[in-house]
Image (cartoon, rainbow, N blue to C red; front, side):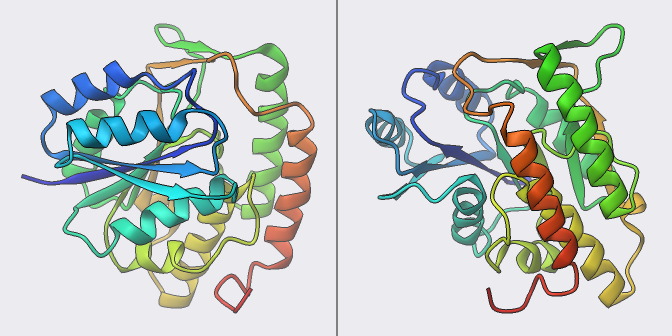
Length: 252
């Protein structure tokens, strides 16, 4: 049985963590393991996470960061703990479950039936799909994705969706071992690092090893920490990524 680990970064999520949904999913999917990273929460998040681990220690682990390090470092710390273990696929997921957990199975099916390295969720509003985003965030997201595509020189619709799954191999180790240069736009940096490694190692182009999956459902969950001003932070960080495109793996 192919085993999958999902990193879930959490910062002050005590009011939004859907414990029952995680528990029910784990009961039905014994090959999936969750690593929750408490990123310096000041509410009751760590208590809930520890309770979930206590109830299911074979499928749940918790990393507790005493201070808030940001989403990029929370996700990276989860990968650093998970990479040495015996998993076939490793990914990360937003704690609010705006992307349903059932989508993990669809991502796994895509990787199982191909030689792809990565499946990334994409919030494309199509007929028959349930994609509910606030209007302002949608249009700012389209502008951000366009800018990211230009900088990365790849056609990508949605860099920021917090649902991604990777095949565990040496590329994954190289992408997640060095600290990220940015925090908010670290998803873009993942694509940029992958492109750099492809060029350095003369591998198949990114268009042949990464696929965007149009999500069947993505629902805005109230209490999101993303604000409109983060758009400008993201643009600034994309510029940082561009300026560092040949030095991702140098000492920070």
